[in-house]
Image 1 (cartoon, rainbow, N blue to C red):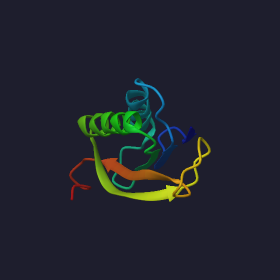
Image 2 (image 1 turned 60 degrees about the horizontal axis):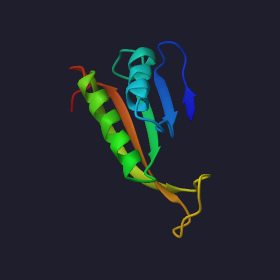
Image 3 (image 1 turned 30 degrees about the vertical axis):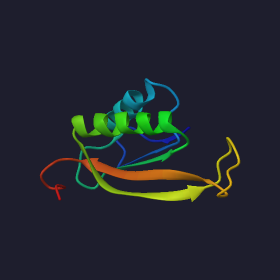
Image 4 (image 1 turned 45 degrees about the vertical axis):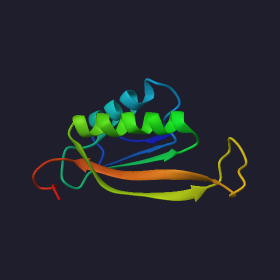
Length: 108
């Protein structure tokens, strides 16, 4: 897991942060605590979609972020090499997302 942050940061990055049932709330709480509350601040979260458990944890994180004042600004999927296992496709699909505060000046 990679977490890059400084107190009240304009950018928070979490890569591969979900391994256990309590991680979605912990990651969401970290974003809420450290992401500066302004219209330019963003959180980048990348989650490898290894299995249905990881997908369920990702849905829990999405719900937590939305219920706690953040909005999904952009998302996509990329294939990367996974250090956990080899795949026939040469990598594993990662879902990435960029979040910002759901406040009037950032609403789409």
